[in-house]
View 1 (cartoon, rainbow, N blue to C red):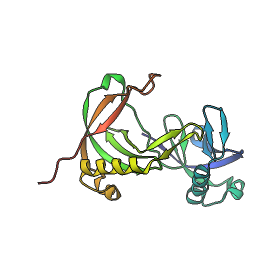
View 2: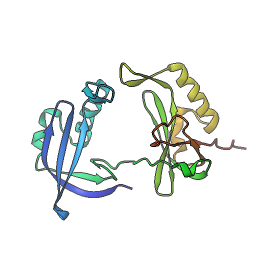
View 3: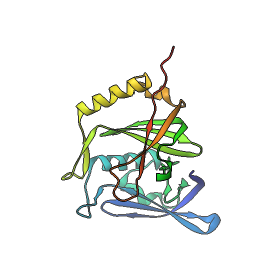
Length: 213
């Protein structure tokens, strides 16, 4: 789980073409924490950054909503204090929902879980569940990876099929998904047969909720 560090003073803002890094003083321990926000996307194939309108819009919105500022006035924020959280690998300016993964030893295991979030993205839906003190994700993909663009694009026909499956499984429309938050469900850990690196040996499926009598 992420640790809240408190309000930390912003020491420096390093603005580059595709990233902005904020450096904060963690005075209690005489340390710094860095938070990096991305303006573009990194293409792993070409190993170069590229512009992306969606990521750029998210960047501007984060500055407005979290920092109450604009990209043109980031340097004016130096000396102010902001809420900072520490995750396992990174620091954040909001409380992160860090996602865990089951290992190969967990394949075929079934666990009790609680739905904590159901999110919609351009090319997929994501169901977040909590087991113990850890969060896991189950994806509903309705997109296709386009190599030339370096991202997934949605297929409306696949999306419709996925939403129909969602309603059959959970007995509510996807638009009413917030009603499922807090529901107890069963999940099963399955082998990811597409994994060739050993880094993602499993995925989870969320079992259907029983029909109301």
